[in-house]
Image (cartoon, rainbow, N blue to C red; front, side):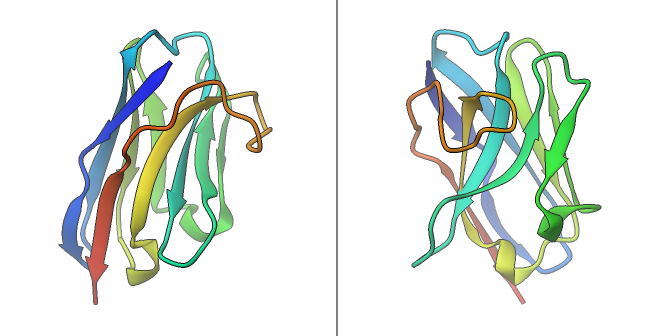
Length: 118
């Protein structure tokens, strides 16, 4: 499955963005999905994940209460509110085994750049 992310941009601190992820080849409808991000000079980290049936979600502590992950049959979304400068990164999505973010099922896309200015 090839991922394609969109929705990034440049916002001021406190602003909001909604990221979308679609499969350009294949489908991820029966996989758990996760959003990751990679800031300059840092390793890629998981930000949020959602189970196949949307009955379970996970958020890294730094985004709890600000980010919301959701999905429908075709896309996975990441609603980001109250953005902070430390959220600046390239954001990626991928299909994952539930709670195992070291392994992915899909091919990484180009990602979408999020830049938050203070």
